[in-house]
Length: 146
Ligand code: TYD
Image 1 (cartoon, rainbow, N blue to C red):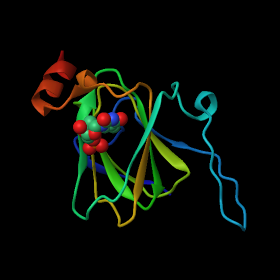
Image 2: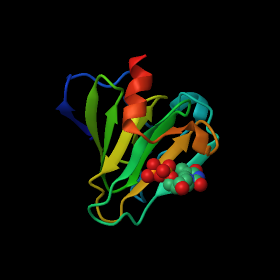
Image 3: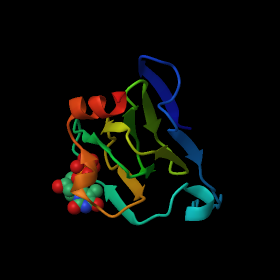
């Protein structure tokens, strides 16, 4: 199961952020999960990338996206995703490969607490574009307060 821990501020999720359960085919030979963009992810998948070999104590992310939507899966191991829409902040612990976390546009994200050997698989709605990033938290806050 995934767990969510309230970091501070409010007890609900940041706007439109949600955990989605994926199909899981149980099999004594090993389990299988699949993702179809029209059925399981609320956007057209244009890019896939993954984080791996993350050294203990390191964190990733630390930005928001102007337009990009993402779906984040702990394909192996576990890590925490801290989401903040400017009003509500919440920590999601991902530790099962059949759950994904949907992150819409304009949500600040940080990923930390990676377990050894963990793999963070990310499905994205657009190709990589540096211009879509907001890497300054104050700028992010200014934009969401407008
Ligand atoms: P970044 O998205 O900042 O990493 P994270 O949020 O996971 O910590 O990306 C790190 C670097 O990798 C940055 O220089 C851009 C490059 N990059 C690509 O070239 N293509 C991609 O699809 C991604 C996600 C990153």
